Image (cartoon, rainbow, N blue to C red; front, side, top):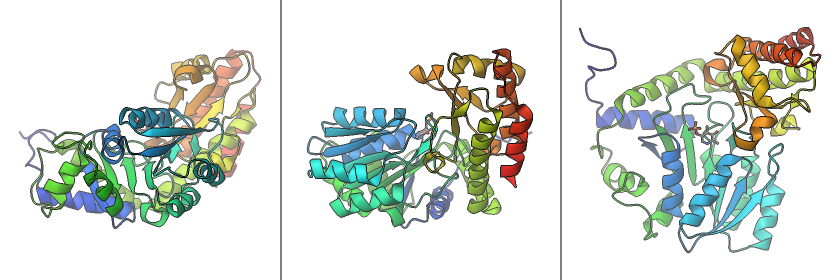
Length: 366
Ligand SMILES: *Cc1c(COP(=O)(O)O)cnc(C)c1O
């Protein structure tokens, strides 16, 4: 008996290249798309180490924990880094980015997280891209939590390095990821003596040995199961239609916000403006005096499969994450999450209105 996971024919270079082409179509990009054989942190770190060095002056936008990580990598590469931090309940604006360039005209690299599942905000990438292009800086974007939930358009927005992963709104595997690379970004890397070469982190290795060789020979054995899962998940998105998948995530976010407001009991959306709230996941603020981690533990005790989590680190006290992405971008998952949070709030002595929350979800989902 052959086993469906184990007894597979080797993944050919042609099949690998065709999966890259499908991912490129998802991003509507003419740029090179490299599929990296690891979780999204691999291209996120690889792209920074390749494109930034001691001569780089970077503007690092921080709207959540990933921005902090990118700033650490940039400093480790020897770059001069200016952090632009905004409170996690908002998004950054194009005017704030413009002001940073006015203060430090030598900025030649901008790193930005598109949407952040950990904080629930999303940033106006198209507007920020215009500012970055006016200034001629290289634009690095983490769209892992945006792809599948909202438009990701590196060519239209002038993004030079756009990283995606399949494990959030695409509903796919976590073990492979992709990055689109502009011609300018390749040139910056080639000119960087510190860029990783002959290394698992190296994007240049894929450029020189895979892309420039006509994508005929792979660098090493690919993560075959994950590649097949990525292909299947892109196929499913193509069949459903990317617009329909994004609409489902938008509806889940809107229903969660409206449902939480109707539920009451002191619960409210963490990101104050709906336009700054990410469609991939919705964060909620726990009521005064009740720890978010306690509410989530109570809600999960009733149903451990609900897409609920407390915020990471210091946010565990005040932030509840409703991770309504991928298979959980449904009315059922949103409603069940709010009902369970309602029960948890009642246990803690609050007075939530579960029926009002159900009605609000139903109304939004139309
Ligand atoms: C989820 C996410 C990633 C990938 O990280 P994992 O925690 O390993 O899934 C990267 N960047 C952002 C902004 C994310 O939300």
